[in-house]
Image (cartoon, rainbow, N blue to C red; front, side, top):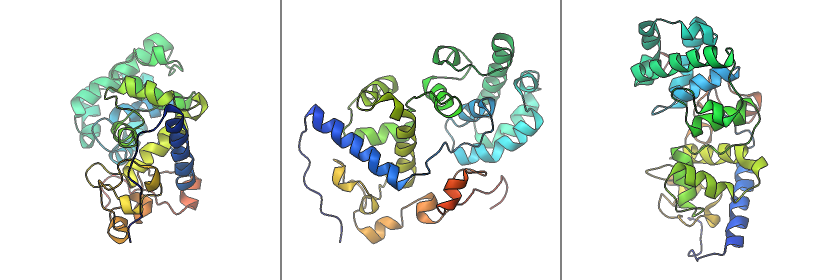
Length: 266
């Protein structure tokens, strides 16, 4: 039988903060191994991979970047690259011409303005070609350990479903959600929410009947509530399938996660 969830009622600010933090704690138990789903070995690789991830999947980026970084391992190499060669490598990522301009452009900026090093400050990162606040916070949180909220499409969808905010603009969502949590929690919070959006709380058909936070969700019932049917909607390791990374952290593998296949492998 589907879970019994009480009708949702308006709540005070204090109740909202408590519920939001409880959701994050429970998601931390469900995804204790949550991590960035882009493969990277240094800040430069993470920056480039995050720019490439626009309007495509992390999986597709991870399947594409090994060839890119093997050919152009440092900003100096990519800054001097032949655009046509880069375009051919990036073709599987979609919008490959625009992305080629961005990654070559940001590499040139790194070489000219930052001595080939990725800056660790928000105001400097957002000046780079193709880099907005979302990309900057991914890099700051995961390459430099500086807290930030990553407002991608999954994050936007879930925090509105959970009624954490009614804002629709990313910067306003970032501010509204950030006010519910201590700054130290922001990066892990982003991972928990995004992982839940990719695996269970999908855009078109949420797996409500398999959701561990159903009693805390105002939108329960928008998706499939039958537990057995909901289980069939689960993605990645929750559904027994490979995740997004070719080289995931050991904790993910220890928890039953499976690495994704290289580009061209079914």
